[in-house]
Amino acid sequence: MNGILAGIQSPQDLKKLSLAQLNQLAGEIRDFLIETVSVTGGHLAANLGVVELTIALHRALDCPMDQIVWDVGHQCYVHKILTGRKEQFAKLRQLGGLSGFPSPKESPYDSFITGHASTSISVALGLALARDLRGEDHRVVAVIGDGSMTGGLAFEGLNHAGRLNTDLLVILNDNEMSISPNVGALSNYLNRLRMEPSISKARYDLEKILRQIPGLGGPMGKAVDTIKDSIKHLLVPGIFFEELGFTYLGPINGHDFRMLQKGLREALSRKGPILLHVVTEKGKGYPPAETDPARFHGVYPNNGQLPGPKESFSSVFGRKLVELAKDNERIVAITAAMKEGTGLGDFAAAYPDRFFDVGIAEGHAVTLAGGLAKGGLRPVVAIYSTFLQRAYDQLIHDVALQELPVVFVLDRAGIAGPDGPTHHGVFDLSYLRHIPNMEVAVPRCGAELEQMLTLALTRQSPVAIRYPNGQATTASEPAPVVWGQAEVLRDGTDVALFAVGPMAEMALEAAELLAAEGVQAAVVNVRFVKPLPGELFHWAEKVGKVVTVEDNVLAGGFSAGFLEECALRGLAPQVKRLGMPDSFVEHGSREELLQRHGLSPRGIFQAAFELMGRPKPAFQRGTD
Image 1 (cartoon, helix red, strand yellow):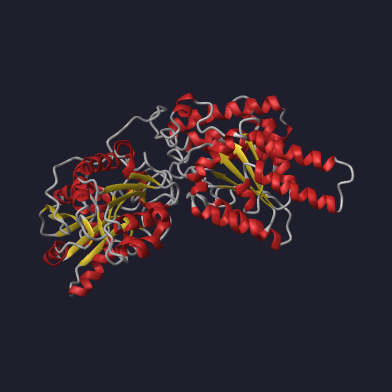
Image 2 (cartoon, rainbow, N blue to C red; image 1 turned 135 degrees about the vertical axis):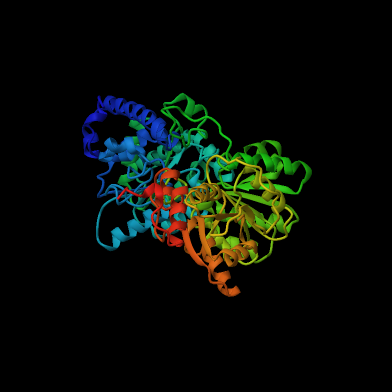
């Protein structure tokens, strides 16, 4: 690594650089990001957009004593590069390597784990209040994108911070994007602010002139304050934030070091809550990402090549929903700023009046769906599994309690891979299964997903369909899906393998390994976690030995429900459960993490062999 970047070991090294050197450093960081992330995979466009802002922040602050909270956190790569971790980027988001999100365990420069949107202002306010109560004097900064600002939690934090009047800097990183382009009234408001930066300057110029007029003291000074308030209402584009109790500064160009340094200097010199509006370009410096920032939000490792399209569960879902909507005009689709990620791009194009992107507001998405269903429509809500956790109360109160026929499509269920513990969707079977009136289906492959979606839209109760990120298997044509029934993929007499969703493919391979050792294993594709298929208990009684395989935490998941029902039925099969442990799973490839927790053909084979009390299999003998 050559150039200025090679000499940056900590933020202190930035303080001695000239303006020309800062611009050179920004270019070198962008080159480093493009080269590294195209190989390791990761969030590219967001990080390219915050290079100058991150450099300027670390020049103005004294971290780690001063604290920065990165909203969502996927834009923290530049921060990590500048805080002594650039040598670790070769293993970015890989098992045992550098996390793609802030991690206090990784570095004292990372103030808080952030992986979900709209949390930074609340976290930063908590840190600032703790500072004040402990009599400390450092600065606390929240960096939040305009996409995250659409989340209700961000406004709750703004509202509280404005009332308390503690020293806090919120930087609004405005790039007109979350993952999909931003939507809604707030987006339109910020568009107006970007278009009228001269108005903000006019306000400060006029204030300065009024203050310089001789004799403006006492009553006249109060009159000036009144005039200022009137001017503010007439001229200040950030009046919305001012009314919440924040001093609004900006908007400024987030790629201009002179303006950034001036803006940060002014913001950090003021007391109370300050909002600095910085306008950046997502994907800055890399033409493909500038042109299509949504596609380059996250890239996959591919020998240095950026990804092309692939047939995934998401695309199967999106295609089937468009097809079903042609014959059913009551079908509407909802997403929370994840149109492309959830496969709803084609639906939005085909039926714009029946498509609702609510921004990063999952709770609103669920309650909106409840209202639509109550109004006689058939809403389909497509959200990542980990993000639906944010709408748990709405699931219960606004949908399930009302017995409303809303279909929830949970993308990225199970192990999410390199995004790590903030993004693994390993809790959904547990938090959905125990909600009354909720039904939960898990497709093994793309063809099953199509059938389940079709049937779900005929149900008169809420339904959740969950599937992982990645390619939808098409190994065989599934038997027709009958609601609430499992599918027997292989007969057997010695042990039964109950597999949830795509785990069925691994169970079939494990059955082949078992057959080679003289063990006849039945394989059952569970299909439904709620209601549990009656066939499971038939096989449990018939065989007496069961291995359950699920891409979910064992606590409260499929296997827990199976054991509960066995107890109610007076059955006592010997059961070996495979799934996620009672701990947060680190980042790494999906394949590595599944294998680590026994969710592989060999892992399932081993569990079955142990359950049957057999000696070590032939292919493992002699390996001790």
